[in-house]
Amino acid sequence: MPRCDPFTTSLLGWFDHHGRDLPWRGIQDPYRIWLSEIILQQTRVVQGIDYWRRFVDRFPDVQSLAEASEDEVLKLWQGLGYYSRARNLHTAAQQIVALGHFPNTFEEIKQLKGVGDYTAAAIASFAFHLPVAAVDGNAYRVLARVFGIDTPINTTQGKRLFTELAQSLLALDRPHDFNQAMMDFGATLCTPSSPQCVDCPLADRCEAYINNKVAILPVKEKKLEVKTRHFIYIYLRCRGQIALHRRPAGDIWQGLYEPPMVEWERGAAPSEAQALQAIERFLAAPFTSVRVVCRGLRHVLTHRVIIADCFLVETDMRPSLSDDYIWIDESTLDRYAVPRLVERMLDEIVNVG
Image (cartoon, rainbow, N blue to C red; front, side, top):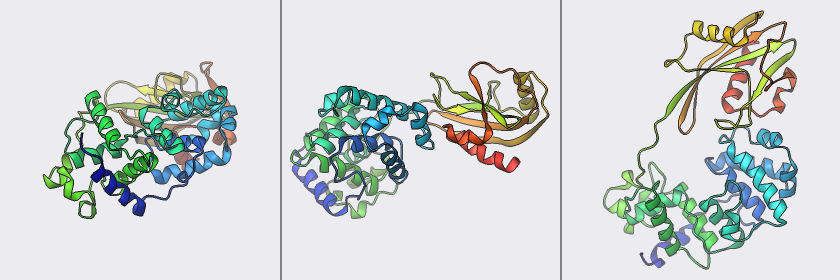
């Protein structure tokens, strides 16, 4: 392993002058730090700040979060995506309350639902100043480039190698600053594309820059195949009420609400005529009118691309739906947490009527 002094000294010197001013920095409240780390998983900092403030305002402590309903937590989370994070956050809050205090060691923090090695290390160093390196995507990128490492970062070998390297470089007297410096450096200077190598204080020792490999490091193994799914949504309106369904476990958007939906599984996207036939089969009852809300609405997830059609169907008599559907007053729809895709469709329904 390389000696830590030159790299760490340069990194911390840069951070002291260029570190980001974020609302959860400069505090040692483990609850608020943990909250920020969960929100920032798969979320840009600019967007995450607003959500962090909303959560802190609504749930100022872990007790209030633990006592909230899952629906309330999901609704506040709406728009952030990856909703398992919100469910895990709620469960972990209940774990903390049951424990009687916020866990204060790396291993104990890692026992919280939804907390892995990186998040546990970040909380441990930020809240308790424990000497544990937090290796996120920014750290992988910075270390891979500076030290010229082409081991894939999404392999067991790669994760072990980069974690050991980061730990060897860690400033034991400033572990919290070191971890934050690595994040900020990767987020603002050593970025995935168009990094600012000319202004980089590590350029004279960066193997990727010296050997013209910045664009190819870090290395990742080939991703899983992305699957395309076609959804036909039925915004079913009956005498001022609409039907909703809560998505079950085992698929995307668990616990969120959506209108009745038929998944089209016959290859290419359905034509309008095919979609209408699918709706007729699903409802198996007469309806007053049907109007197109949107067609081919695209929503991209990590390993899924959702292509959605939505139709506004009005009827004077409720069709027979399965027991997992509920009917609500249309005016109360904003109380229910829905996926971002459904939220976009609801915006379109306003234009249809």
